[in-house]
Amino acid sequence: MDFTFDEELLALQAEAEAVAADAVMRYGRRNDSWLCGFSREFSLELGARGWIGMTWPTEYGGGGRPAIDRLIMSEALIAAGAPLAASWFVDRQMGPALITYGTPEQQERYLPEMLRGEVTWCIGMSEPDSGSDLASLSTRAERDGDEFVINGRKIWTSFAHQAEYCYLICRTESVEGKPHLGISEVIVPMDTPGIEVRPIRDLVDARHFNEVWFDDVRVPVSNLVGVEGAAFSQTMRQLEHERGGIDRLVSNRALYLHALTLADTSDRVLRQEIAALEIGYRVGRLLVIRSVLGQTPAGFAAATKCACTEYEQRVADFVARVMGPDAMLWDELCRGIAYAPAYTIMGGTSNVMRNILGERVLGLPR
Image (tube, rainbow, N blue to C red):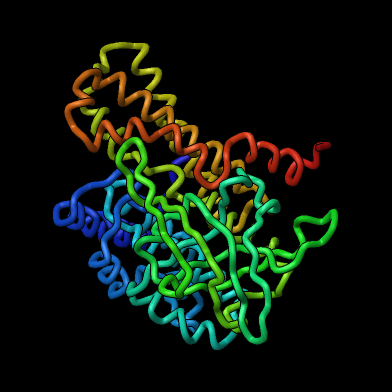
């Protein structure tokens, strides 16, 4: 299931691997580097190279390059552990969302600084009492003249303590019996009065999560993205970008490659496990490539996320067993193994992904 790339793609792959190696040397290596490796300096470097928004249309300042180019570049950087987090959400979700749904004024205002790698955005989506049910969110934005007044609370908001802007998913209307209606997306500058950010430090010492409180936060109605009250489908489209990318497959690739050098390949059982992991990687990569090339039906990113994140958990188990007690001697290695259970939670749990796949893709009864 390997793919043959032409000379241009091979050159891009080699360049990205060299850039990644240099970045790891200067900034350190991180597991889940698209989430846990935050460097504004490296974000500026990516912007200068044209590696942020490289697939965005040229009329919006993007590179206009094929989706496979971004996949090759991102795979090399994440697999090595280069720190992409400062600009990852911008490149993966916020920029494409504004290109698709934003006004010309919003595009002119926000896209150029995104492309330069100058800003970080967070996504205000999950709420404490909503679980994975986005339609049950309760954070509200109520009109008061030409402003929205926002009240509510978000949780697991990565980079809220670093971000200049929050792409907020909120409720602008309550429709009886139709919770998917009345949801809107609003741009909220994070320095707006009334916002309180409470950092969350998790058990492996990752510090990207936050809880965010909105208390009578006022933003212009012109910050609305798309159609007021009808943004649920916009958000679902965002989640397709979030769930079907290469970041869901290679977050702990460096750990696997390291453990592979230490594995006792004279053990036939271990060789079988390595073979299964190699097959899993290639199947997952095929799913990602099909997703980024638009060769999958709507909703199929749920299957890609399931397959890839469960694969990453198997990688962590393999690394722990191969290295044994030595795994506890290297903090980054130990954290990478301990963090693995989160892979099938972030971006939607595996059971939710299977429901989406069954109901929306296969058409099975609820």
